[in-house]
Length: 147
Length: 153
Image (cartoon, rainbow over all chains, first blue to last red; front, side, top):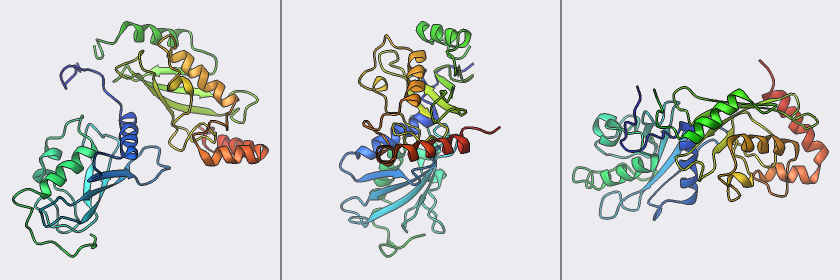
């Protein structure tokens, strides 16, 4: 018995149509542009690989830096979160020093993933995380280096 | 039962799609989501898509029938009004939608679009250019893609 688990609405937008919505939103440009994303392979009908960009928040060590991330939406997205990996090197407490993977155990949005969350939410929340007390002053690797 | 609060209109449309399918079109709801349909459209005779079986997916958003269904091709197709991701440029899927239309009419319109590509209102610029510059050659490519991607087991 599957009742609407998300309260109120019981309409479930299937994966592909959800990703098409996200694609269109990404193409239009989000807010002030401090986060953005787009699809890697315009021919991939299943829309799996994405590149996200975060502009480092003001008054932090990240200010002025542009971070690139790779997001991978598997067949079970958005029931399951995408895998998220920094391509640009960054020193941040939820990010692996070895390969840039965002550790879901240390990043609440992935740990407590809900179907309504989007790639935009992930990028926005990571940007907030950069400005948090434990991350805003961490010594950073040279700008423009990659995992 | 899942989807127990499915609007009556959607139930009616679904029943009719299953009991009286339109020629060359099949549409059946997915088991876990009654608003999500697996669709097959046969390439119309005397079109470059003849002999092809095209798979599509269709979703009825919460606002349906006040908002149009969302539809796209899953099978690769060379057509000036269909892009690489299978998105379809068709007026009734956008501003010309009316709640008087149905899933059936939408699918029939898509089938008709396969018979009558419209390169003057393109979604895929390169394909449309090709179509206008050299229609014979573009039609050959469309036939080739039909053989490559829309036939087979």
